[in-house]
Image (cartoon, rainbow, N blue to C red):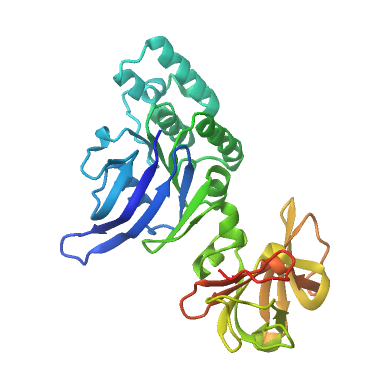
Length: 380
């Protein structure tokens, strides 16, 4: 196991006869020994290219990658001591699932009894015991993915790379395996980087999450930091299910406390006294962010009309409208448990202080994050 450092890493593809494509731009990241990190983003954001550069399957156009203090750029994949589970499985068709899983150990001439014991252990972890003596072509895509994951997890390596490790699994299986895989990695002190577009996988598995978009790193932090202190407008609108409500607004002077006004005055919220170079000032245009989980329905001075009520088994998602007609402001609120509210009904709500965020209208950077009691400002 070892720490992983990416220093200004850039990847530029140069297809013949076409313009160069910048897949990764100046990526800086330091991953500690024994840490689990997720690269999260939509398709084409650069997360898989990053993983493949670390593995050695793609060259680094600019910058440097180091593992345990050893520079990897010029090393072949086999020289990097990195184990990888591929999204496309990459199992050897002539070998049984058992021999595929054990391949790295057999190649290193590990004792047969030790190999058999480790294969049995990881097969039980991933629930593929019944597929061990079958061939890849005869098992489902979900079992093939689990076999590929088992082959990576069983291998002793300084770093484990997992590319969409559970994309083909049924939701019930994923829920069980997330906890098992994290426990496996943590118990063994394994350093791991996984690529995923699924926020639930990232939050459940990773200690920290790197949110990427359009080749760039948007924010690198814990799941709580991404949700409670998003660094910019993109993270605020991307992380969370449902994501943050975002509304154009303006900061105005108030009687002792500034206010933020949105939707032509339909929504007005007080702010604490703000200080610091990034603190929004009266007259400044901003993006107002309202966390759905901190819109408290059933109390407060505001009123909105219920558009839809979705009961999801453990929580309620309410689609609300503030005001009428084309100028109405749509909002999403999330409540724990079942909330009785019929479409068309008018309900009271309030914005809890910690659920209020402000972002610069020009460059989208965070300016302010609400505090739990609302008495102090927390400029970003």
